[in-house]
Length: 387
Image 1 (cartoon, one colour):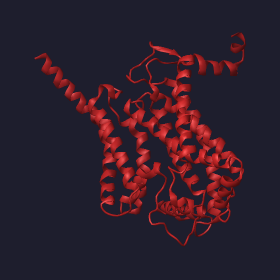
Image 2 (spheres, one colour):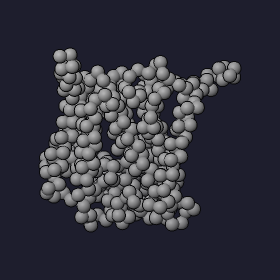
Image 3 (cartoon, rainbow, N blue to C red):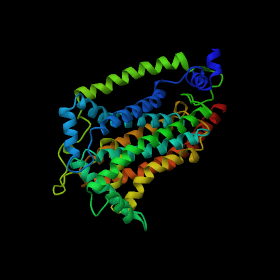
Image 4 (cartoon, rainbow, N blue to C red):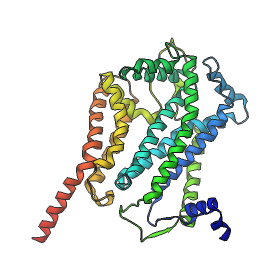
C-alpha cells in the first residue's frame, strides 16, 4: 500500500478502479457503459489491423477486402469482428442511452454528462457512415452519393463542402481516400470525448435505479462491480462471437457484397440497420432542407433534455405515466426503423412523416413536461385520501 500511495499514477488507478465508491443497488443495465468502452477498443484494434490490408482505391478496395477474407490467415475473423462490432457498438450505446432516459440519469446535475454522451453518439454515427462506404460495395457507393448530396442544403458553403468531400464532380477515388482518412481519425477523437465523458461521470458519481442520492449506501468498485462486469463481459463475448462465427453477414445488406457500379442503381438504397430510424425521418419529409434539418435535430434535441425537464423525480420506478411513455417511445423507434427498411412509397412515407412529428413531440414536450400531469394526479389522490 505504501508503494501505491507514493506513485501518483498507480495511486490514481487504485482509487479509480478499486476504491471508487458506487451505489450498491445499480443493476446490470449500468454495465452497458462498460460494454460501450469494450466495443470502442474492439473497433480501434480491429480497424488498425484492417488498415494494414485495405487499399483505399476504387479499383482495389472491394477486392482488397475479398483477398483479406479469402487469402489472409484469420482475415475473415478480422473483417467480421469489425463489421459486427459496429452493430454491437450501436446496440450497447442505444441500451445505455435508453437506460439513462428511463431512470432519469440525464437530469441535473448530470446535464454535461448527458450532453457529452450525445456528442459522442453523433460522432459515432458519422464514423459508422464513413466506414460503411469503405468496402466499396453497391450500397456503399450509393449511400455515399445520396448522403453527401444532402450537404448541399448548407447555405453559401454547401456546394463547396460537397466538392471537397468528393474531391471532384462525383463520388470517385478522392472521395474514398477522404472517407478512409476521416474514418481512421474519428475513433481517436471519440476516445478523447469518452475520457471527458468519464470525467463528468466521476464529478457527480453514478446514478441508481431509485434516482436518489446514494452517498450513504455505497460499496467499493472492486471486487463487487469488477466481478459483475467480468461476468457480463463473458456473456457479451459469447453473444458477439456467436454472430461472428455463425451469422457473420446477418446484420449486413446483401447488395454490399457486390462491387460498386455507378451505372446500376440498387432498387432500394438503405443504410445499416442502426441508422434506419433516422433514414425514415429524412426521406419521409418531401422538402430536402427540412428533411436534413429534421435528421440533424433528431439527434441534437436529445442534448436539450436535461435543460427542458422540470421533474423533481428521476426514476420511472415512481413515474407510471413516464414509464408508459418510455415503452411507447421505444415502440415508435422500432416502427421508424421498420419504415426506413421499406421502399420509399405509400403508405410508408406518410407513416414516416407522422412518426417523425410524434418523435419530436416525445422529446420536446412529453418527456420534459409529463411531470406536470403526474404531479397533478398525485395531488388529487392525496386530497381524496385526506377527505
